[in-house]
Amino acid sequence: MINIADIHDCFGCGVCAKACPKQIIALKLNKNGFYEPRIESADQCIKCSICVEVCAFAADSQVIDLKPTSYAAWSLNDDIRKNSSSGGIAFEIGRQMLQQGFKICVVRYNYAKQIPEHYIARNEEELAASAGSKYLQSDTTDGFAGIDIHDKYVVTGTPCQIASFRRYIRRFRVESNFILVDFFCHGVPSMLLWQKYLRTIGENAKLTDIKWRSKRRGWHDSWAMDYTYSASDGIAKGFSALSDGDLFYKIFLKDMCLGSACYKQCKYKLDNSAADLRVGDLWGSRYQDNEQGVSALIPFTERGQNIVEILQGCHISEISFETAAEGQMRENARQPGNYDHIMSLLRNPKISLRQIERYVTRREQLTRIVNHARHPTATMRKLIKRIAK
Image: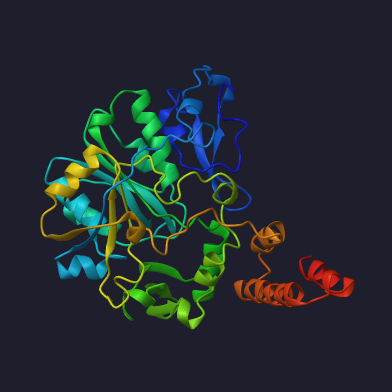
């Protein structure tokens, strides 16, 4: 393979676009609403194969072979902890490494484009836009393009984004300039889901502010979005939570429309990582009564461990990895049998998100009936097939 022209349904990390010496690779959404690389001006390809060399999707998994020490952690700054998805430790790493002369490549929500994107923060004010999780695939194009590999950066992303980025900086022998941070990842849903969700807020509504993991009801009920949007009659506010039936979270967390690679080729569950540090929500029994948020903090390299030891203004206590990973996914999500049909519904502009949710719910109910029947009839099985069409 001389380039990534034949790679489809990949991680969509965009590192190949960053690595291409001719800058002829672009990251585009495919028909199912996931980023994948496209070679533009193919006649300019010099067949160097660097794009393939840095691709974690096309290569064997490049992970850190280490049984990690793990920590429970949170910021002692109440505002940082409140505005973060868990304990605020990822934000603290970025904030404190800025003071060490690093730039921070991380994700914010672009309100002009209504998408998450990687960008480079050079001070704490710019870093503030990165606080909190964004449960969509990020466009890495501009953020990665702005990285000077001879400068010092913290790069945060999904495990697959970080795995490819590790291959990239190793290929160019500049690992010492970078600190890589990933997180326990559920998978990324289709951008088509998000586009339909935005229309449930208002046909012409534009978000002007959003907090994806609002702690309005506490950390354990924080699958919730607080948002502000422009409407025809001015500025309005909204709140929606999974516990109230939020459609985005219901479909996302049921794994109905994740990226193909999230089902079939994710190599980065639990302690499989190419990062220096992994963060995440520390779900589980130990902190089940904590409503402020606790982060799992897992260093995979000596460089990561050194950062843990220099963090200031944070609570950090050692725990077992089993405690850190409690409540996290242990294996890839299972692709639903009606995946292609769900994608076709998402692509159809005439189908609402509420209609899709009803279809998913009905099919689940019928599937349970068939699975629990002692002797499922041919008619029952045909009913399942019919509703999938």
